[in-house]
Structures are given as structure tokens and as C-alpha cells.
Image 1 (cartoon, chains in turn green, orange):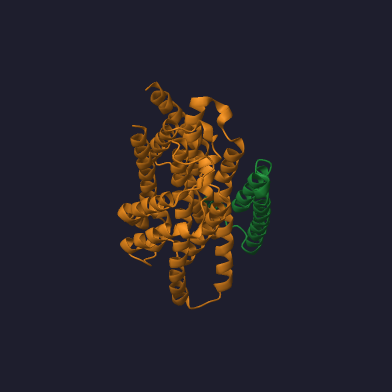
Image 2 (spheres, helix red, strand yellow; image 1 turned 90 degrees about the vertical axis):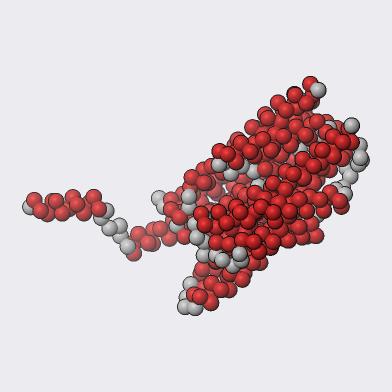
Length: 74
Length: 330
């Protein structure tokens, strides 16, 4: 999963977890942050997914070396 | 003798405020210096002015929280407050040398709590007040981060088709003056009020003011003058270093980070919650970095902030408790 999406998901969980400890007057802050971070997590995951679809991962340097070595031996 | 001690501790509290201004000036103006909107010298004058102006904008809710919502007022004495200040200052010095980005606000709360517990036991702690402060230790950077991410993304989305990049940058450089001023007001409001709270608690403890009294005007002016003088006198040296060391932020990124941090500080100051201004701006800068890509963020810094959250209050409390044991012996 995308690292940014994971980070936002973690922030959403922390915000939600603080809800019971927060005084009644400020609980809306926890709710608002949990919602915003969840939206950002979903948005980031979708963004990463669409990028992967448009630009499929290229082989890394090691893979290329392996492929070149393979093609040289054949 | 007691009056002399009282004024000595007031002077220590104002010294703490002065160092806070000296040390935190870089947070509010490093971005306008690194983007060359203002020279370092004019940037500190700009920040110091708005640090001072803050007393006209916000009330003294944060000062009331520090003075009345951390420990029961009956237990406060000159010795307790002096020990609390020693705990906070010692921790700040230790973490300054270790390079940990701790918060002087949390150190103050920990120091006062530790000294009061050493004097009279844990029942003197105001659990509700401490819980509110502890929750916002974590929430304020998260709030700054989310706001900065949203502001930066919206601005980039609105202007991404613009081909006049130079004109845009000029516009955001001017807007950075406004965002830096707003952040300096937020910094002045939240950090100067912590010192006001300490002095208010001292005056009540020494019997110069009745319990439940509001912060006197001279205390408000003295605290804002101390933080502005600290910013003015030495901040530009730190800013010069930071301006060349930090990652070069574009004007739009600096504007987004400062506006988000300022909005967060306005909200918490109006609600009477003492938070770390350093952690709030760190969260906001991380928000702008995350909007670029996750690898643009120095996660080591974020990790050290988390350690600072965990360690500051208990260590400051322990040092303050030990100091009180020595003070009580005399």
C-alpha cells in the first residue's frame, strides 16, 4: 500500500483514539481530524493506484542487469 | 525577604520568556529569510512587532489555564513555582544540547506538576486540565499538518495551469509577509501567555492577588515585551543559520505552512490551551512535504518530535521534584 496513505490512516486512527480522552467541548476536533485524515488516506491510495496503472513499474537496475545477463547467455 | 524572592522568580520567568523568543524566532521567519522576502535583520523586527501585538488580539485564557488548571492553587508557593521553572529550564538546556525538539510549554507544565506533587502528593493535580493539555500535545501538530496539506493542495490545484510562474512567486512572497505576521501573533499569544500564567500563579501564591484574579496589565505587557525583546536581540543569528540549512521552501510552501500553523495557534490560544508552537510549525511543514511526496519529509525529525512528546513532561517533573526537595530543605 502507498506510504502516504498509510501515514494518513495512522493519523486518522490516532485522532479517533484521542476522542474519549478529549474534553466534551473539543471532541469535534478529533472527529474532524479523523474524517479529514481518512479522506486524505483514501485519496492518496486512489492517486497511487491510478499512477501505477498509467505508469507500470519499470524494472530496477538489478532486474535490468539480471535480464541483460540472461539475454547474454542465451 | 519574601518580596525579594518573589521578584527574583518573576525575573527568572521573564528570562525564560526572553530565551523562548530568542530561540523560537527562527520558526516564524526562517521561511521568509530563506525565500529572501526580507533580510534576517528586518525579518526579526517584523516577528518581534507581531509577537508584541498579540496581546491586543487574544485574551489571557492560556495564562489562566497555566495558573489555575495544572495544580490546585492552594499548593502553589514561591518555592514550588521556582522549582517548576528550574525543571523546565534544565530540561530545555539538556534537550538543546541533545538536539531534541522539545516544547518549553510542556516542560513548564511538567515542572509545575512535579514540584507540586513533591510538596503535597498527587491529589493536587488538576486531572482535567492536564488531560486537555496532553491531548493537544498530539492534536496540535496533526491539526497543523492537515491544514497545511489542504491549503497547499488547494493553492497548487487552483494555480497549476498558470504559466506566469514568476508573477505567482512574487505574489506568494508578499503573502508570506502576512502569513509570517499571523504566525508571530500566534506564537506571541500562546508562548507569552505561559509566562503570564506563571507570574499570575506567583502573585496569587505570595498573596499579592486574590485567588481567581485575572492577569494584571503590567504582567501582560512585561511578558510580551520579554518575548519580543528575545526575538529582536538574538533571533536573527539562528535565522541566518536556519535559512541556509533548511530545505529550500518555495514561497507557496512557506505561505501554506505558516498560515496553517497560525490558524492552529489562533484556535488553541482562543480556547486557552497551551501547545508547542515548534511542534505545530513542524507538523505544518511536514504537511507541505507530504503534499509533494512522502520521501520529501525528513521522518527522523518527526520521530524525534514523538520522543519529545513522551519524555518532556515526566523528565521536567522529575527535575522539578528533586529541586523542590532541595528548596524545602532550606
